[in-house]
Image 1 (cartoon, rainbow, N blue to C red):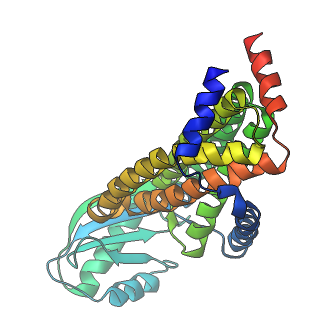
Image 2 (spheres, rainbow, N blue to C red; image 1 turned 135 degrees about the vertical axis):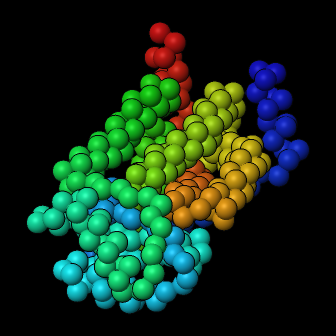
Amino acid sequence: MLQVQSSVNMTHKNTIIDFMRWNKVVFLCSIILLIVSINIIGMYGFNWGLDFTGGTVIEMKLERPVDLDLIRSSLKKIGLIQPQVQNLESVYDLIVRIEPKEDIKGTALSSTVLNTINTSIGQNVVVKRIEVIGPRVGKDLARDAVIALISAWISIFIYISYRFSWKLSLGVVLALIHDVVLTSGLLSLFQIEIDLTIIASLLSIIGYSLNDKIVVSDRIRENFLTIISYSPSYIINLSLTQTLIRTMITSLITLVMVLVLFIFGGTLLKGFSLTMLLGIIIGTISSVYVSSSLALEIGLQRENILSEDVDTED
């Protein structure tokens, strides 16, 4: 009883933010964004990288800057479809991505491309890296990536279903799906190339967002067990207020680190860090207005927490 009274008195000493006042509006916006993201993915698809489609990547050093359109046109003349040619860190660094050709092997294709580039630009380039990925390997990687994402969701649902009330668990899992779908929608909209680092960043987003949601859910569970005479909406607002500083500090520090990685990490980490930036922002918002508000909308009550707590102890 003393614990209950001290908890209530402590809450009145500090201002409690009424997060749930806008939960229906923000929740509706999240549903709209979710539908829009799914439609965008259906319309534009994904810009799959060579990790999934297969092909050849050639990174080279130039003696002097050249016109990239000249290289593209010369590669198209030898029968290459939509060759991707772009600069890396400077105008002297060049990377060429080519889709696989059934009639030419990877090593022979690389030699043909290099000879064509040297002839078209009139200089001898220095090859820094050549990677050849077969289409069969690309399909296997795509399948494994989907299995990894689905396995992560299933494992998370099993854990939090045991740890919390099923209403809290359902909110957490749906919020994680919401985070990945919205982030994937932005990747599709801006046609960011999807490679293995992007898949790694999506899994990292699930882990980061899950950690934040478990902290909030655990605080909601504790407050339901110790505070009796307040409504579920009040308990959720109290829990979110108590964890707000921790959430903001963690998110800001992580955002700063990922932003540094985006600026100074080089071309190969641009997609990873950009995806992490988007996912952290979306995941932080969903911890409040998707996970918690969904649990409130489906009727989370103190009795649900008590029954689950008794079952866990038994």
